[in-house]
Structures are given as C-alpha cells and as structure tokens.
Length: 231
Image 1: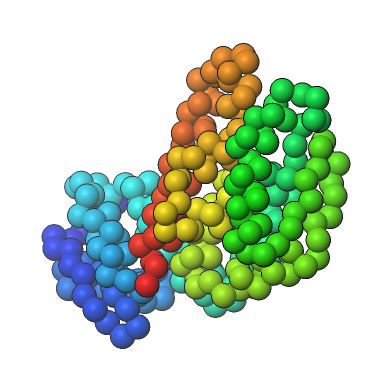
Image 2: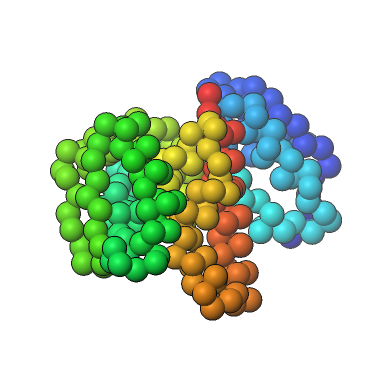
C-alpha cells in the first residue's frame, strides 16, 4: 500500500492519547478507536508511521499490532488471554531441571535458581522444582496467587505479557520482564539457557541463531510495549 498521509501528530483525547494522520484519528484493525493510556506510547506509535517510506511496510508496525491486539481482542473479554498466560505457570520452564549429576543442572542452578527464588519472594509463592520432563503439578495456592495478580493487569500489559510468556515458555520470566528495572537481555538468555548450553558444546547453527534473534527482538518489543503503557 502506498503512503496515504503527510502529517503525523499525537493528541490527547477522552480516555488517553491517540495518533492523527493528516488530522484523522487512527482506528484499530477491528475498527475501534485506537486510544492508548500514555503519551509515551502514542509518541512511539506515531514514530512507526513517520518512519514509513512511500510504500507502507506492515512488518514495521510491531507496536501498532500489539496495541490493536490489546484493544480488539483482550479488552472486550480478558479471560481467554489471562487463561493462556497463567497456563505457563503450570509448566514453567524454570522449574524443569536436568538430573543433579549432569553438568547442565549446575548451570540451571546458577542462572535459574536465583531468578526463581527472587520471584517466589516477590510474590509470596512456592514452585516445585522437577528433575526431568515428567509433569508435576504446581501448588494450587501458587497458581491462584499468580492468576489473581495477572487479573489486575490492564489490556496493554496483558498483550505484552502474553507475548513474553509464550516466547519464554515461562510466566516467571514474563512477569519479571515487567519490572521497571528488568534486564531484558539477561532474562532472554535465561529463557534460552538450554539452547545456549548446547551451543557451547556443539557450536552455533545459523538458522537457529537467526530464529532466536528474531524471537529475542519480539521479546524486547513486548517489554517496550509494557513500559510505554505504564501509567
């Protein structure tokens, strides 16, 4: 599609902020008013439109797509998104360790255990650690506490959290990524610990590296959405 606008602006409106193209407010893909809670997020959305060339590139609108998801799919009924997010607590990747006599176990203890223990202290919960891949149910009180927290989050944060949890296969990592002082690179490395371990042993695969870097960029973009939407 050819670029159809000249001027991009941001303006305050009822309930928040929105982007104007040649004075006209943008709507979501579903036809709703694209109103966001902070000027910072609106400014970032505007920059995506300003950065377009003569031909619009749909791949260069990651924030717009995430915001549209939040407004069109999450906001009307958050329950489905909340359920998908909370499911990661039941099989959180940080809880599944190698056997204690394996070298990988020591690396998991070094990287994952402080992260998981800090999370448990922050939320007042307890996770079961499992050696091997056989599923073990997590404490019901832990799952209930985390679901109660997730249910308090706004639609934009839920949109970000769904991406973060699915990319990392971990609700722990996803929720830690929402912290204002979160180290995104360290969290992404923790999510990919086993793959990085294999690279140390056997070397890098070009296609796997490209896939991991693409997903890492998506992880960083979701963190950015959560930060920009934070009131």
